[in-house]
Amino acid sequence: MGSEVGKKIVISINTSWNVVNFRKGLIEALRGRGYDVVVVAPRDEYSSLIPPMGCRHVEIEIDNSGTSPFRDLALLWRYWRILRREKPLAFVGFTIKPNVFGSMAANLNGIPVINNVSGLGTVFVRGGFLQRIAKVLYRLGLSRSKVVFFQNDDDRMLFVNARIVRKERTALLPGSGVDLVRFSPSPCQRAPSSAIVFLLVARLLWDKGVGEFIEAARLVRRQVPDARFQLLGFLDVENRTAVTHAEVEQWVEEGLVEYLGATDDVRPFLSAADCVVLPSYREGTPRSLLEAAAMGKPLIATDVPGCKEVVDHAVNGFLCRVRDADDLAKKMIEFTVLAGAVRDAMGTESRKKVERQFSETIVVDRYLHQIEKLTAIAT
Image (tube, rainbow, N blue to C red; front, side):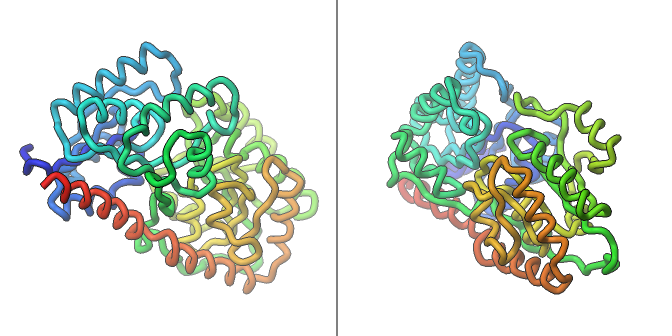
């Protein structure tokens, strides 16, 4: 596929799934402005959906959860070869390894870099030796970036204060943005007397607060026996903090939760829930909360970076203390005793907040602005 000189953009993410689910709007907008988009991502079952989006897929092997320096050097070499061949106007990186090793390779090739630090992940939540290594790698990767987007100010200031990136090179984005047409409130079909449904949508990791959700479910059931608790998300993730199949099966057998599996379309599940819950330890800007809010759902989340930007306490939901199942249960019980009209009003506030602050068009416009600036310099 040929392209105009200077009108090619390379986007790199650690899974094809992420590209298809979260970056379609950005890719469409870039193509609409005449850019040739090349996606560099590992092959998975979603890779075949990338070419129909109008862009080329270049496969790259990424060991997402590995810490081997030899594999990481091999990854740097692979990025260097791809970028030397493609010669794009800009490299746009998402997720830790593309941000670090893709950016280093772009720097070596003299290609301008735009990064998105969408969340700090397990390494930053857990701290320790791996966090120190991650900071060094980020410092190397982001050293010459034109702009580094963060999804909340806490993450941005953590990087600035650790001298990983200069403040004047940072900017804020409201998450990855939500398609407000695709995610919109559906007519309520629930019977007023039916049991309250609490839904947690996330990769099933302990850092997402799955343990607190389960413990809170036990506590809430003592006072609200018919309350229902649902889990929706990937189980077999390559992550040191993943919940196991056996643990989920045990909770299901206990009658504590319903496990809904994984899905490419969360909308029917969000629509059927009364309240979407995310007791995460830290986030960038959680997609599950944004999509739920766009569908007019009340939210309960932890008072931590990423979540507190989406939930206004007692307006569109409740904030609870992090790693505190008792406080989470208290907020859930508080939600169950609200009048239906009050819960509906919270849902309406959720939708208004997303329209005001988190629309996908806001995110796409900011990317286009940065890329158009590079185009102007190149010409």
